[in-house]
Length: 442
Image 1 (cartoon, rainbow, N blue to C red):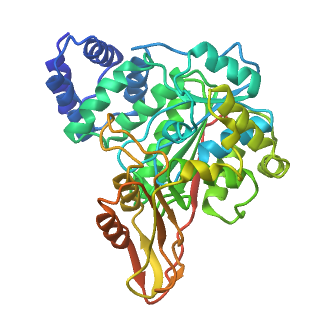
Image 2 (image 1 turned 90 degrees about the vertical axis):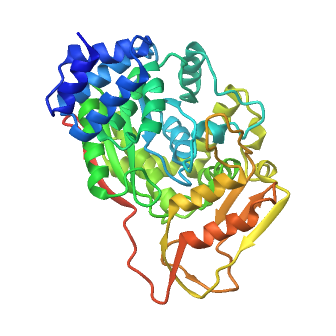
């Protein structure tokens, strides 16, 4: 078998078989074929697409490139949640402890943020002493004893994906739905959970800019989950503005703690999406028979404080200073040298927010990374004071910057103002939740 023949076959729009896909993935993982040949295959896939069977074969080959985690010795249905990336998306730190407080087992291996999207691991590392790099045995022990653990991915979990993604990032092949689907689902399936809830974002702060693309991606991933025997649901949610008001690491942790403490209203987008995802996790875990029952269980876990207690227990189990998990102490992790309000240049109504630009502004302050080697300042970022449809004037700030370095503040301010469109009339609000895609067994 020759790699060049596989490239030509896909470039001509023909279907690859399982043996050809396995050959390409196995050889590339072992450094037996050059980067330029894999790059050519990736571009052929991007241009010619893959059907469901091909994507499943690609996912299987990527899973087999490394270790698979066995969670069968943990009682019950193990659930996981994945977001396709967004701005101000703090849902994991809300729903993982809430579902655990309702009797669920949440076993999540997570990744770091890159560019304008925040990473859950980076947010967790806002807690002094916390170590996200846990052994698989300790990861399982935490889930078994507390009910929830969010840790870094095992170094040998789907190594093919790490190599392939590095090429996709520099060859214009990131936005391929079969490649995205195989990348996400290979890691979710290799991580060993039984149930997977996918939050597929669409809008100005998402990789899937249109509803149609987001739906295609959701359907593809749900079909893959079903193919591999996982209970899978995808929810399509809006990212035409930051989901939460906080954009940063410790700032987003603070907002999660506020929600778990009952300080955020039920009509807030972060609250709505978090509860929707939590409902799906409880349903897939067979802990609730109806959405209404699941929602009531989650609300009770907020009101009783049991969800916040689960977050505190997880932080402590992973070596973090758990005393910060409180409204009284979390502000200490958000202290910066500068607090700068940003005011609008005109009065009117917020008719559009480019969430990606807001994310890039936070990144410029030091809250995100342009490369995987960049160091994050956990305290910095920004807190929005407006949402779509809000009326603004010169007296009310659009947001407040939390900064330790004053070098780029003018550029950050300009970027934020450019990201917001102010109109004379209010515009129609966009939905927060667009759709729910379920597999045949869910």
